[in-house]
Length: 493
Image 1: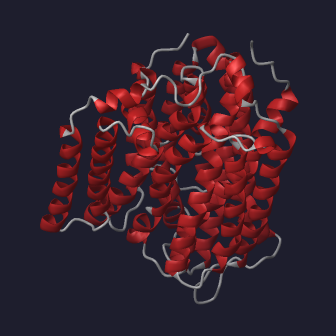
Image 2 (image 1 turned 90 degrees about the horizontal axis):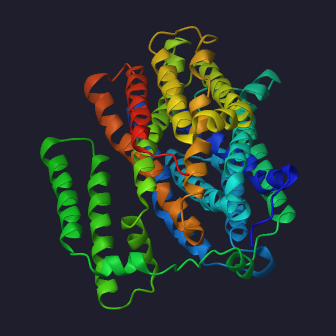
Image 3 (image 1 turned 30 degrees about the vertical axis):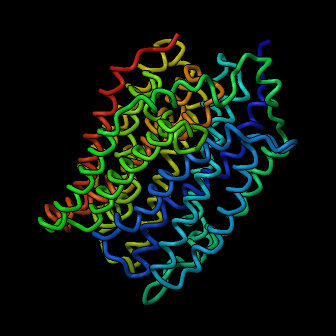
């Protein structure tokens, strides 16, 4: 049996929840640095506070992917329980975040918010693959990207619109302004309602129907766990030793303490691998850890090649999200003081810039990407869009006019990053393991963010402590590397 072809409104309902998810994500990306600085944090410590977000994704997404592959809750289905639960938690976090009385509270709420967004977001990627035929994957992920773009526009312009409606945009003596507070509250409500729309308007295929379509269960043939049982523990021990070496290097050289996290992650990965290997060797292979580690080490070849491009492209994006506000405020509006009117005006303008790249991404996903992919293929389309993104980051080094910065934020690269890799993967991966593989693929979104969050602050302090503009040069370079990495990816049949 073949899956039935979905009509336009079916595609709409399947992806509509991402509209609200991206509103929450956009509010977080555009305003968290502003919130941290408004509560008294300095520029060079921003990356340390942002660590919570990618670290949460690294832990949450593979676990949620593994669990959603094996879940069936009657009428609620397989993926929908997770993005509904994530929406409820994220909406609560968005309501509480702008009421933060102190910096530590805002940092904790960022962790809660990002964990909730990840619980919602990961199953949605697999949900599109579950519901659509392979010949509709490009259309499905492009429409999902369009909703992401529109949602991000709405989330990004909230503070700017409220400012022009007369809502207070600064707090004498410092603090979180009302424009940010009301934006988070409205965003939380829309987040919950849009996800509820998808939950109510769609019905997932049951395990019996999926088997009729020819898809094996999440357990597959057990080959990845059997391969894990045959592995030597030496590689896991080397990861642990490397992590300890990074920690020793930090203590000896005086690098920023955030770099300790890299060592801890390396050692933690080695320890997880060691435990998973021993469990598999002893025959206790029916456990989450062995399956996740086995599937990670046994990723399909196309996924490994796409992962490198994903790694570089998301490194550039995370630099942008952390440093665009300080860069624009200092170089286009002439202030690096978070309590000043000019800085907060710059912060609002960053919301407009982010709205532009997301708005263009929505249009590109609907009208440009499907046409390009049909003519030159998904892989070449992705490479061309990443090169355009590199040029946009480089433009920040030369443009000082706030209006002209709109040209640097044309979001063609963002549209492709959100659509093309997933369209390629969804047609190439075992459908019974779509959740876990989508979650593991997102590790290559999270790891570069952790590297940026731990290393970028050290580089900034050491070489240009008062010149954050050079972070955009790093972003341009790594986005170009992402484009080059796509040359290794072969177009799937």
